[in-house]
Length: 252
Image 1 (spheres, one colour):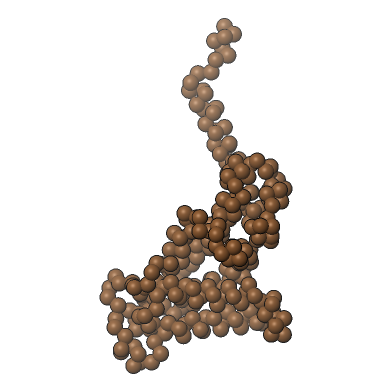
Image 2 (image 1 turned 60 degrees about the vertical axis):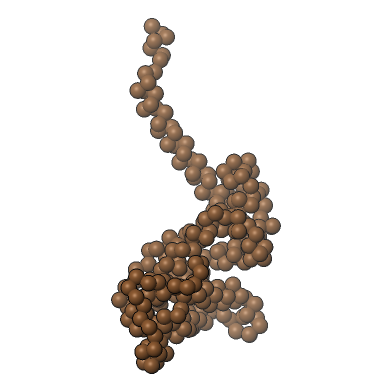
């Protein structure tokens, strides 16, 4: 009968609808990712105030309503752009390989990574510059960002503990302070290299000067954590097994 033959069994329906749902989810994720990439470009170029929803929808080849559908508002989209920037840096850092049996080399690896990441991802610096001009009012609303700092600080904490145990590093350095030092030395140079080049009458963007600053910040960072003399090493109390080098410092 026509009626019975046109019906689809429950088993058949499950087989046909499941792939459709998967395809729909993949398409939705693709659209969301495209919006996020476009928003990163627009906000890094124009800041939060200058970044327009219309610019983002045009660049992502979608519609304004889709941006509001996936992110709710321009502000929530901007916050997720910032969160994603931090998360991607963490993911890249997680790929680093270093030997804690050689703490100085391990710390050098971290310093070089941070410097190179800023150099390769100028959009991150411009996003942070934009948000700092707003006194961090958007990022403060993020429920994720404080957790995103933990992996980066933990890496440095492991390196510091290893260095203290070997008598190579001071035991009064917190991982949080070291993180700020490394970030500041690279971030300030790169985010201000255009104005500083004019002010100091030197091309800080040249390959030679970039290589010089990379070597300089590596040396400065190592000097800041090293024991300065055998006498200092004898005075420093060894860290107990399992005790963090950042004990007493607030979490970053």
